[in-house]
Image (tube, rainbow, N blue to C red):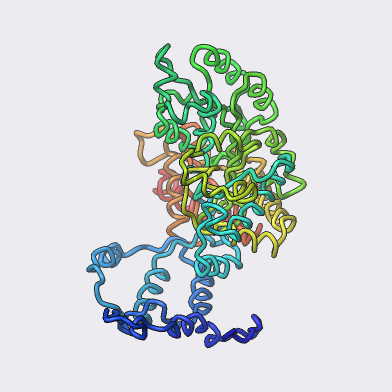
Length: 540
């Protein structure tokens, strides 16, 4: 019997029982002509039975707490350890009991990285469409390895990655060129693995690095900035290049790769060892530095070196017309990493690896087995085989939350929020410049500002064995810790030139200039209190 059409706007819980009723209406084997006794599932063991909870209420309670103090809850380790030591569950528990217990843990111990005063790390904010979209993702439960696994999931992923490729300035006439992975480390690993295939040729997949290095015993190198993310060393270790063969180029005053030293390294290693890739960074995690993408692109083109851009942080600046010029040259990259769960405001976890031409990565991951050939039912399905664009096979439908958020908010609106973050960081830097007790260490062109509280020239440290510089370092370490302890703001630790400083990374659409004003007020007060306590001139 065909079910009565249901208006999605008036969907009720009873309407959701249609599938269950279909299951129960299937004739049992015992009605057929056989002497074999069919097993009967106990009704209490039915995993398909609906649950009676108000999911919206649960989500809303958690969402509202995201911006409340304390930012970093003081975890009761003893209580958390009781959770670790819970016995393996064998019998079922009432759902209300499980939900209440889980809610209490999340409420008490979740770090509120969405708080407008959370300036540490690269904290994902998440947008309001995420809880609904993630619930829909789980309910649909699509495996997006390939088109046959999920036509709708792979289509959405093609749509979203095409939007990102267009954002990067890629030629969109040759089909899908991207894949959604778990994080920037996996995306960068995939990019360098693809660069290996480009460097050695398609036989790299079957013969391995040892085959190609046996003649001269020299392993090729990977070049990146000394400010690049440490995941490149991890990738080199996993891929057999070796961490020692990652050549790091010192940075200039803007925390970009020094081009003179990069050119020297290219001349030194190109013929003698070979260069797998030059991995540029568009937004270093510590300072927001951006490498000279156009000039690096020219070097790579001339030497036929794979040009990768790690834009895990800075890639979202492309959504702002005012900020887009900062990433000029990214369109020439052979591969690009963008983390959607960083400055695109999305919830964890989602990163994109984008390719100017996907043929190389497909040659790395293509299998010639009969089972794979049977999956290529037509050219459209073949073009949607996402497991040919990266290492992951079975994957959830990561594209759905992005698809909904981008369509609802629009990239232009999101880009204006990105620009506002940058303007807020500049406001902080300008405020620091006008304050005589503060020193601006570095203000990036993105949304990072680093600064330091200075000591008065008359300061005489009660710890006479320490230099004035050491005393100032103690002061700034104390300020950072005390700010976190007071729960209104959080700044992750940062060292510049081996000295601690205060770092604000603004990647939260809730952060306003008023938060900057309050932060500086707190820093001045905390600093004054420390100085009064530790200056022999004032403590007498």
